[in-house]
Length: 313
Image (tube, rainbow, N blue to C red; front, side, top):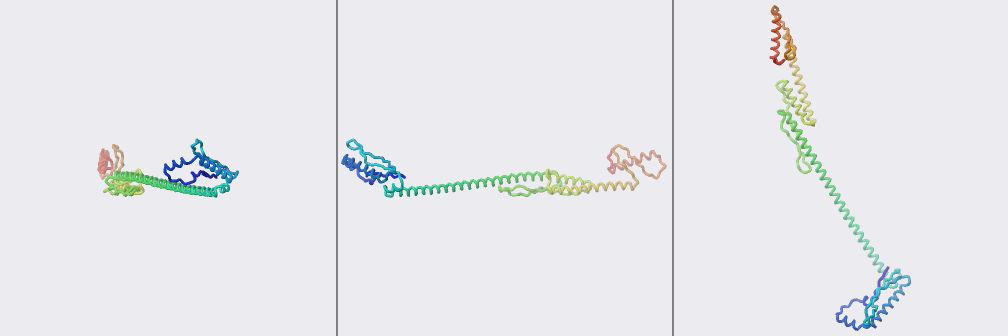
């Protein structure tokens, strides 16, 4: 512990407010003898401090000088630094060491308190920065999710438009106008997320016409690259109706053939240019066999051409 004592009266007494003229007069009046006397008093006071302090303490003195009229420097003040135990310093300084220690402890406590306040402030600042970063990260994540949802909605919209356009193009006269369903995105805009094209199951006047209609309906239902479940149901229904039409066509042909057989006709269907041999019972068995055979063949060919069973030559 260190204590500094100012031994000069000029240092210890409060400053007096005097004019410059008075200061000059006092300086002139002060004699070298008074300077010498003051020097002795300061040295004696220093020795008394050292004696009270004891040999275990350390004393360091810095003298302050004033030049006399005789050209000599006189000690007119001194700063004495004492370092020792609290007890020794209190004995010399009249409890000043304890006061100094208390002051030091108080300063240390205040410094620690200030440090704690700074630490708390720093922690508050760090927490605020951390919360700010978390909020920004959360906002960025929300924005990224929003952008991803918008991109997905745009892709769905393009796919739906292409899907329904394929239905319309293939359906032709059997298709109706497209209708869409919309979904509002996170950006507040509406996006197409569904659609449908009505397809009419129109039966024809004949089984052949019905077959052609159902084949086109089936193609319209399967037109998109990725038919939906509803599309496949429509295609299956069209296929069933087409199969029914084929059965009706087959049945009608069978009935026509059966009708010919009832009339005693026998027909063989062959390729274009191939002669057809047909035998028909006639009442006149006495006609020329060669003429009868030729006439039968020509009559059979003519009848088949009329019935569109074989192409015309």
